[in-house]
Length: 254
Image (cartoon, rainbow, N blue to C red; front, side, top):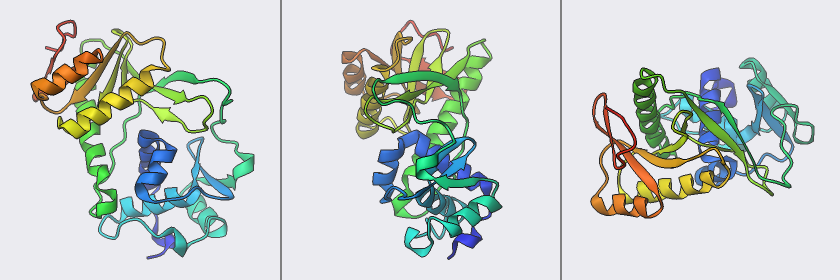
């Protein structure tokens, strides 16, 4: 297993999408990585810690093998060659020319185009969370396709919390109803509680938000609906293919 075997630019972009989904710090902690000391990869104008990104991308291209150990390659010459071969750049961490790191003096948020990315399923336990990513993305795709047919427009929000260089990305934002959605792979208590925490965190930064909703693959229990409603968060779930229901009557989904 060597870095020279990584030949998929799409795998690198999928790894970048997972960093976006979780945020850099959560990504590093969840998968046991540390920040790159000297270099960052530039992928489509955005910078990422190079060794974690390449390690994770290797596992996406070779799911049976899993991520490549970062101890088997260096973050300089070997990473630069791999990235160059795939059409990306490697730059010194103190000379980032990709997506500029915003000032950390104040919190900021901005709308960006909705990004669609499908993440391959890993077979290693360390990256089983990507299975959830695939389910969530499928749910988002189905929901947005149905709503766009009715004239709805969707984007997402990019958030830079005050005092942190970490970038957060929301799942879905309906520009007509000003509703922020967070998708979860299941309607179980752990996923609903996780989604609730995420969407409450995101909403603090977005003034143009009048409603919050969790997008779920099935109806959650009554108790979980009550939990969401106690925080003024709606539940929206997939009843069957092409049909979504809501716990709040003001969302028209049929």
